[in-house]
Length: 328
Image (cartoon, rainbow, N blue to C red):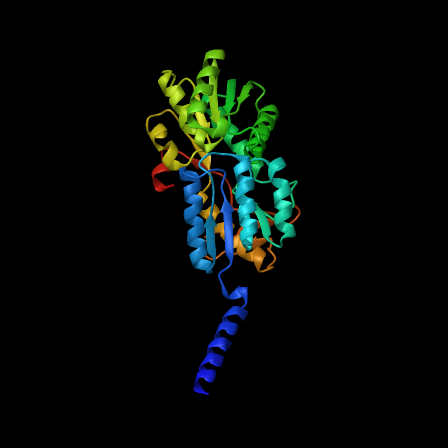
């Protein structure tokens, strides 16, 4: 009789464990960067981990060492199979990713973008580092003042399909057309996988083809070192201004040596933190307010309901005066 009782208790315990709702486990929030192993996305990863600890969720950071849209699709398919609760992604190619975003939503997963958007997709939210227009306008303003508003400039970007990079370039073009009649964008080059080596080659070719260039813009953070090195090696420091979207740790040696005067960015650590908080809100079905007080962040975070954009803040201008304040 005692054996039966023990067996019954054991069976009941097993049944209770099997019947424990999945909600007892931590919510899994995944982020797919454009590539891994660079300071920018490593800082986003660190911010995401900090938020996961603060908000008691599990953070999954999954990416590839090179910028590859097909690999992003594969990673997202894997996360769908794992039945994670939320997936965020920095979009490389909206054409490739929109169908898998749709499949993830149909599977009941919260899906949103961060760092780079796909506004034509079924994503529920875009966690934006700064408004695309502000990023494009501020960069041009900060560059043009370095050569007194007259001259030719060229752009070296990352992958040609990257929606965030293309949006910034479009607003750079708009700003030049609107405010700087004596400035001409002579060429826009794209790099394979956003590689620094390819960026160096493209910058060298641009300076050869346009020997009167006044400025070079490195759009992807990975292209900044290549463009800066090209100007340095050509002995054109002080003659060709270099600016881009580079992290403080990336641009520090070039700012200290005088190759760059400024870089435009934001705090990717805070962006990663906000990305995880936003995922938790989506999974729990909590609405966003026009202004949101996010625990652990100093300033209220604005939400634009029509565009479904959660905005980190204004662009950060990195200079010799403030570059050493940051470590990312």
